[in-house]
Amino acid sequence: MEIWKFCVLFFCAFLGGTTIFLVKSDKSKLLKLILSFSGAYLFAITVLHLIPDAFSGPDKSEIGIFILVGFLLQVFLEQFSEGVEHGHIHKHQDGHIFPFGIMISLCLHAFLEGMPLAKEQHNELIFGISLHHIPAAFALGSILMQNHFKKGSIIVYLAVFAIMAPLGFYVSLGLSNGSIGGVEAYFNKIMGVVIGIFLHISTTILFESSADHKINLRKMMAVLLGIGVALIGFFAGHH
Image (cartoon, rainbow, N blue to C red; front, side, top):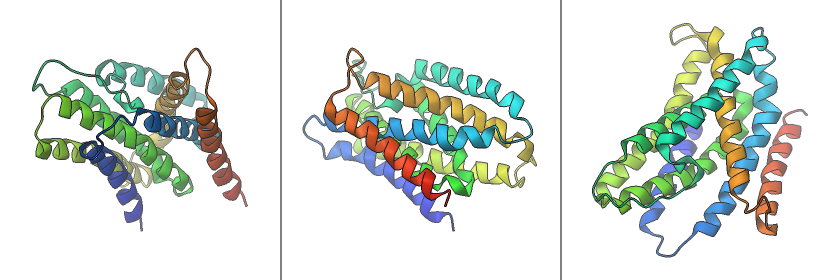
C-alpha cells in the first residue's frame, strides 16, 4: 500500500541524521552536491507537477495567494531554523542548550513538505523530499552534537524530525479523501502553501550553492541531473 512511502521518508531522514556519528572528516562538498541535486529536483517537480495540478481546480484564481503565503511562511520559519533545511550547520557556543526554534520550525517544515504526497501521481516527489531531508537531518544532528547532547537524545530528536514528513503525508491523505474534518475543498489551497515553501527552498539552495552566482562543473552536473530525473518522471507519467 503506502507503507513503502512512509519508510523511505522516515529512514532517509533518520539515517541521514545518524551518519553524524560515523563521519569523522568534513563532508561539506558532498552535502553541497546532494543539496544542488535535490534543490533542482524539487524546483522541477514543483513547476512540472504541483503548480499545474494546483491551478487545475475550481479555486485556481486564489492559489497564487496561498503560494505567496507559503513563500513568506518559509521566510519566517528560517528566522528560527537558521537555514538547517538547506543543510546549513551553525556552531553554537552556549553549551547544552536545546535549539527549540530550529527543532520546531524544521519539524513544521518537514510536515508541510510531506503533504503533496497524498496524490498518487506524485510518487517521484518521495525521493526528492527524502533526499532533501538527508542534509537537513545531518545538520540538525550536528547542531545537537555541538551542544553536547548525549547520543541517545540526539537519536530521539532525529526520529521526531524524521517522522514529520510521513505524518504530513498521513494527514494529507485524510484531507484529500475527506476523512479528516471533511476539508477536501481546502486541499489545493494547502498545496499552494507547500508550493510556496518548495519554491523558496529550491531557489535558495540553487542560489546559495554558487559563489558570486557562478556554479562549478560538478554542481552544474548535479543541477542538470536533478532536472533531468524530474523530466524523465514527467514524460514517463504522460505515456
